Length: 219
Image (cartoon, rainbow, N blue to C red):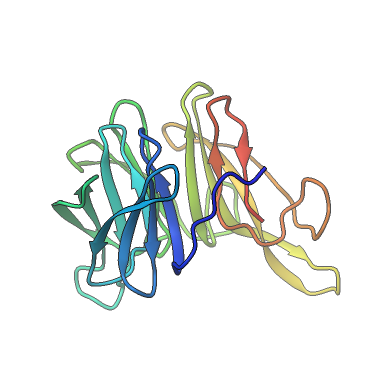
């Protein structure tokens, strides 16, 4: 059942906060728009460039990732209060394409240009890095989205790193979900390539979890 439609926006990434507010990146106007759960726009956060990811932390801060591999400092993550006040900027990324948070405040960042996942403490001290380029288990071709299931002790990363054959006989890189423990040890993968087939993925655009640990993949 459709509950809400937001129009008149060039929508990119989306995030929600604990109050039900919705944050949408407008990739053309280079801004983040804040809406109530009823779809009323209440805030515009003007930016110099369009963010490639959005996430809201458990302590109610808005994180926006920016990918600029053409600059010496690379991509960055900028942090804002929920009313749009700038807090700080962290450099040193390639393409911070997805962000997730653990309950202890640790921050998991998918850096797609470096083909890895970086884990930071709440002060952005680097704790761990895993991944690297490749088709092997635990490596990535195009990591794109991340979610954490702390009850299961697992991290899910959507990656276009499953080399397969399409229906007309060409080899193609298909999406897969790689599952790691919270320390980055590879556990398993799932999802296979398919078009209009139950349970299979053709063109994934992310993944998310609900409170019961169910996984949702828009395709």
